Length: 296
Image 1 (cartoon, rainbow, N blue to C red):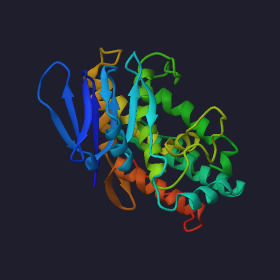
Image 2 (image 1 turned 180 degrees about the vertical axis):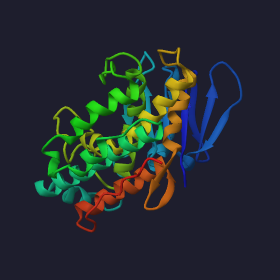
Image 3 (image 1 turned 90 degrees about the horizontal axis):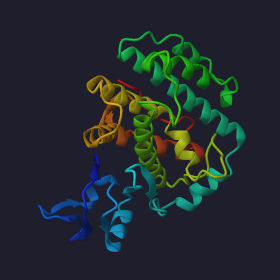
Image 4 (image 1 turned 30 degrees about the vertical axis):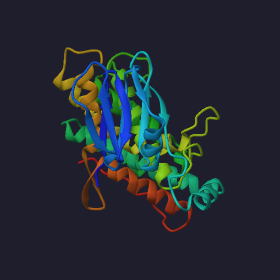
């Protein structure tokens, strides 16, 4: 079942009643109710929103990813369930003791899938994707030759222009890319915990100050779906150079876009759960390959 994505930007009180999330607006208006079991992801943007403890418990019981924004309305922190799978301890053990050759092979698969999706995106918007397909075919174990970086140099200039530099604090649409990636990262972290995996122990990323190294690894092939959403927003609002409510709402729709996976079409949020489940199976040696989606 496709879970819902909720976005709260006005003051109010969030509580739970009869397993339903209840939003009571501070300044009057209709009370909104949503079954908690239908929610997969929610963003709380306004700092004048109060959240009850029973609601938090109910959200965690249903493995809902909750993102809180700072005073500038930028996503800042995330709430995740730490008991998301009945075999969590065993999967943790397999994950932590995974061999370096296994992790390097998984990273090779991840980089290959990312470059292929970057290539698919360029082709989809009418831009020559070469040499990305060739670079994808040349990825070695652990991406020892940094084909990911080579592809990125070509990719970013073609999708947003020769002068564009992908930088967290760079010019527009970097801020929009940041926003989309944070949403994606939270969705991936939610799926990882749901599959019994620990988001801090990555297969490639290993920064000691990063609590979501594995999420940063696994989201890589999904980044082009965010890039596609950003490109679409830029085409739709060519004169806009800052985020507003309508643009943020459009960006949240990226979690429900259709993707190709195993000769079927699935919503992106559902595809992420298949990816993380297959990763857990790779750690337990029940599978050899991570299931990643294809941009269609």
